[in-house]
Amino acid sequence: MTSEIGFDFLFLRPPSPSHIYPTIRKFVQSVITRFVTFVFRPTFMKTIAVLTSGGDSPGMNACLRAVVRTAIHEGLNVYGVRYGYDGLMNGDFLKMDARSVANIIHRGGTILKTARSKKFLTLEGRQQAKEQLEKFGIEGVVAIGGDGTFRGAVALSEICTIPFVGCPGTIDNDLVGTDFTIGYDTAINTVIEAVDKIRDTAESHNRLFIVEVMGRDAGLIALYSGIGSGAEGILIPETKNDLEVLLARLGERQREKHSRIIIVAEGDEAGGAFAVEKAVKEKFPEFDIRVSILGHIQRGGSPTCMERVNASRMGYAAVGALLSGKSHVMIGIVDRKIKFTPFKDAIKHLEEPDPLLMKMVDILAR
Ligand code: F6P
Image (cartoon, rainbow, N blue to C red; front, side, top):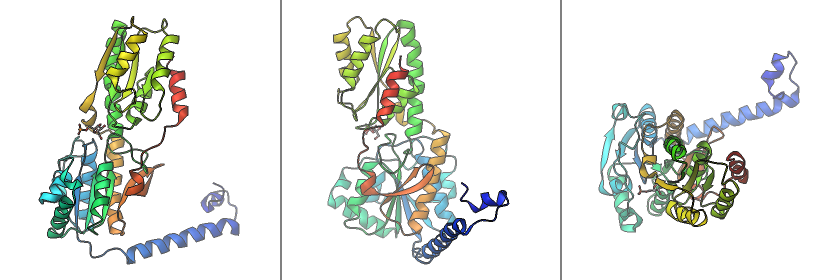
């Protein structure tokens, strides 16, 4: 911190040249960057479209609101595309104004609706989408969705040069280039609220509950909600021997506990909550076990404050990215700062979570 000029000034020390030069260089670089961005800004861009695609997630509406209102502030026309890529192919476009996104920041789901489009996977489907984009004079698209959405945008780019910028909307938090995806924070809070309730009944009956959570082939919903709900075991697809670890742990601590909560990610290699129940029952027939599969409750509900703020920041940044000529990048937030990641890198699967977290789960679940 002492290299900051302002800090030296507070101590009434004259800044030395070695302190000044990097600061001047940084300042000059930032002026040049702003100038270049302004001059080369695609001034032709007058009309953009925004869509939500794939599984819905809480916070998509907050992101959509930010996109629409930022675009209007920048003097752009904005179309909302209903039903994701299906709507893109069918020309289901709605002209949006600032009021079209009023009173939605707190609502789960997506007012634009969404779909998992099979036809868009075909060249014919994408050709149709290209024609609709051209018909409506669209010069840039903000796509809010997960890896399937970004894969779709990459496939479309083979036949269409219209820039796409993505905002990561999925409860799974399985994209590279952002600390949190839109929907994840709300989903894990929904899970812990449910598990807190399950814990009451588990404790009353001395039962072991196996709770299955979503996440497709990623385990981050299970990992965070498991830690947040004080689970005794967390089974995730990223680590391969969770079931054996769990069985060993249950054996060690058999007589000490009355109730137990085990969180299983739906994509875990053990095969889901019922398969885990079978394995536990075989080894510990004396346990009174119940299974609870939380399901789509995890996708709904009013987004948390963190979700609304992140979604608003990402939507705002997405319009700025299109205007500054960026294309085929996903907006993310890393260490509280906006970051751009090419779609092809964002959809690479996340690696194994920090092993220290798994160790911590073991230590804290005594
Ligand atoms: O990707 C989000 C997600 O909720 C996954 O966690 C889950 O596996 C999947 O979508 C469920 O998809 P659908 O709503 O199509 O059943």
